Image (cartoon, rainbow, N blue to C red; front, side, top):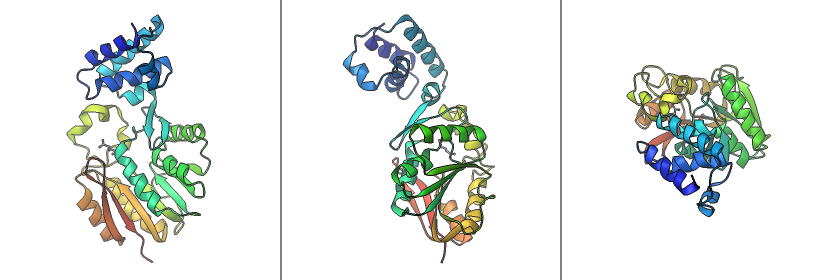
Length: 276
Ligand code: GLN
């Protein structure tokens, strides 16, 4: 089986996936330890017997629904190729809007916390762009923090510290210059949890009580205590939660509350400023 045939095999095998060719290319690159350009440059190159078997095993798992990111242990986010595993959420392109919004407001000398960092996606993307800013990446899950720490090492990002904690409960009052978070925000009975990649992702990173807002409520409340005056809180949320999250920010006393849309034109990130 050569590279062209392998991709064709993947295309047929993964006909239920939204992206059978791309899925196949990623998995083939993983098996051949090569970049995607290699596949285009050497389409007639034959796979070894072992490579063929490994590739077919991946196709089989992918056909059963396992996300490509978990199968190859990697996902690109912002400018970084991040290691991921089943203990971390798979970083989404939509979350890049949160990074872009935060970058507009970050200034030299700040201390910025990323809550529920998972694979480290948001904190590491921001830290890689701002060497003069100190980042604190927090998560309840030790297993996720291990992945995030490995990602920092892989990308030689040193202006970030990792901390196990339950949202902001261990942070002293009036100490942070910005908080960013992509917390769990899916309602516990949401049928989406039984579909696609979500089935394989850690529910601790997805589900937040009956209405999906349990954790956001807590973060908004706690953030008012630990943010310095005029500092910003930025939170990603579900595409139908913008109004409720806006209300939570307003009720807590945040000012300049606004919402930003993601690449799919959904209201995805709400931000607000701590009063003077
Ligand atoms: N954005 C993810 C999804 O809906 C959910 C991530 C989260 O709960 N933080 O697929």
